[in-house]
Length: 110
Image (cartoon, rainbow, N blue to C red; front, side, top):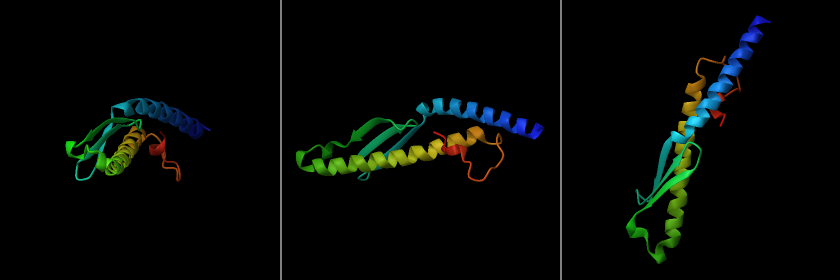
């Protein structure tokens, strides 16, 4: 019974730490780029686009479709990059707090 209580306390600790870490995700930043850096997108850990930088050479009506494709590519890359940072942050927040339970990945709790 004591082991179960200890486990429940660890779960509560992990939940509190996860909640605290989720609040800190707003400060994480990741950048994605496309077209050899011609388009860059910056996102935060809450998966919000913060900035888009478009090289001046792309601002031309005939290049509009290409520019849209590059923005989509850069945004998707930035979101992939932030997902990796989120997983790292969440995993480090719960490191050593919980036993290794197969199938239980606290790094994905966002």
